Every structure is written in structure tokens, then in C-alpha cells.
Length: 184
Length: 184
DNA sequence: TTGATAACGAACAAAGTGTTTGATATTATC
DNA sequence: GATAATATCAAACACTTTGTTCGTTATCAA
Image 1 (tube, chains in turn red, cyan, blue, brown):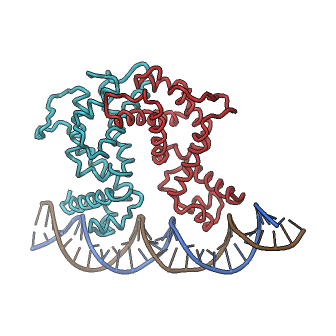
Image 2: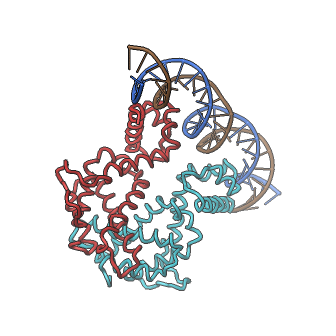
Image 3: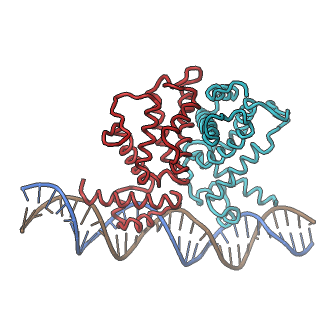
């Protein structure tokens, strides 16, 4: 990818993120993004078809960045072991979110988090699928997964709203207590 | 309120609801609502300041209609007793949603349910507050409530997506099983 | 019946959208 | 370092949408 493209893409993402911290997605115009990013109109449209496509691309980038290579060896909270408990997994995920706070604040702050949350829930569902023992058998499977996903997503949203001041370990601990599984 | 106003308001709501069943809120224009409702442009703006205000008004109306007078004596699933168990309360709520399916399908179907869900969650939080025994004490209060609200909201969303085919009693039963409270 | 007022339609400025153009600047590659 | 490719830019464009205004008509409450 051309350096110029990368630079432009980054400028647009950062500008968009700054705007998202201030106002809702619906109320942001392409023109504002252009001004904030200092990018030409035609350039923007050569990168993204629409404003929705921009948000989607940004969410995808964030997910790739945060969750794709889950095993970082350079971070202080390292999980180089190949398989972890659900507790570890969740804690790890929360740490990643916290590490990338500045990059994701826009998409998930205020009232603009819906789309991000939609993607997030998809990711969570896939995550819980990897822990079959966390999924209760006495209710329909989808119901059980939805329960895990919904409550966890809500917890994360709240945690972010609180500026992530509660330690990830404690969030994970509270969450797992409420699901009724102590050692999964 | 003037009959003409009521008629116009209803026409706009219904048209908007029909459109919401087909496409996302963001992609619906005022012009489309005007055409669908067969209402003049200036008339629309004399009723609602913006499209957002329309959605908000519609959500409010729905909540008033469904939840304000919770004790219906004319419905088959009557709860005329003054206090009920959480299980009964939830079942009752689901029945109300089902009864008003045609009126609410638009706002809560597809991808358009975010705003409704936001209001819905506020309502749910207040509801759970009325059942102190449902709120666990071993985690921060807000955390516990969020857990109840998030998982229930997700369950309802899923249930609606399934065209409400699962009986309300069963939904309530599954939900309460997963929260760990059998007889609250 | 009559005064009040809601709805209408047409027209309007303003803002936003998405595309096209040709010139300019930057980049990868030879 | 020269060259070919291409990303960016600015300007202009047709188009849609928005929200307001105004004079007319239709409906309602009394």
C-alpha cells in the first residue's frame, strides 16, 4: 500500500475518531471529516464509498489490531500459553481494550457505540463458543450464548463509561461470579 | 387534542413504522415518510422538529401504551394483584410486547432497534430495582443491575428476531434459570 | 354559523452528497 | 537520477435533502 494512501487513511480515521468523541455518528457530515482531516473531497471518496463504510472499516481495523494476534509477547500482561481459562481470556481482552483506549474511545464512547457493539457481540459469541463448558445445557443453546454475550457487552460498556477505572481482573471476576461459573 | 392532529400523528407513526420494517432509520428520509403517510411537508414539521424527534416520540408513545398501565383487566393474561414475583412481572412484560407486536415491529426489528433498546434498558433497570432480592450483593450494585439488564435485553432482542414464537413463560423461565434465581 | 386552527402545496435558501475534471505532487521502480 | 504510475487536490457540477415561509383551503369546536 502506498505511503500516501496509508497517511490519508490514518488522517481520516483519526479525524473521524475525534469527531465521534464529540458528537453522534448520524450528526457528523462528510464535509466535517474532510475539514478535520484536511483531506480533499475526491480523495475521501476514493477511499470510502460512504460514511457507513468508513465506520465499518474503522471498526474492522480496530478489531484486527486488538484481537487478531491475541498473543502479544511484548506486553506486560502476556498470555503466551496456547490455551487459557475463560477468566484469563476475558481479562486479556479487557487489557487489550484498555491498551488501545486512545484508538477506540471515539467508536465506543457516548451514544456512538452501537455499531461497534454489534461487531463486538459477534466476536464475543465466537469467543464463548470456544468454551463449551461455559454454555449451559438446560436452556436453548442460543439463549445461553445470548445471555453470556449480552451481559458481558453491557458490562464492558459500563466499564468504558467509567473510564475503565476498575481493574480488568475485577471486572472478569464480577462477571464470572454472576454467570455462576467459578472455574471455567 | 384536535382530531386532525391525532389523525396526522397516527398516519406519520404508522408510515414511519412501515418504513422501519423495511430499512434502517438512517436511510429513511423525511420525504419518504411524507409520501408514505400522505402528509404535507409543513404539516410534518409542525408536529416534529426532526426525524430523531419523531423516533423518540414514537418510542415514548409505545412505552406509555405498553408499560404505563401495567395492570390490564381486559386481557386474558391478567395481573390484577398489586405485587407479583419477578417471574410474573417478566412474563407479563413479554405478553404486552407480543400483544403490541404490530405497533412495535418497526422500531425494534432489524437493525433499527438501538434507540428503542436504549429506552428499554432504562425501563428494565428501573424494573429490577423494584426487586432488590434479584440484585446480587457480592459485586458492585451497578454491575449487578447491568448484568440483569444486558442479558435480558439481549434475550428479548433474540426473541423478537425469532418472531416471538417461544412462549413468554418459557423465555422468563430460561432467563431466570440463567440468572441463578429460581423463586424471586 | 362562525372563529380558530390544522393541513396543504408551492416555493425557497441552505447544506450535504457523490462524481468528474485536469493539474500537481509524491511514490515506487528501473 | 530519470521515468512512469498514481494519489492528492481544488473546483465545479447536478442532485437530493432539509427546514422554513406564506397564502389558500378544509376541518373542527363552540
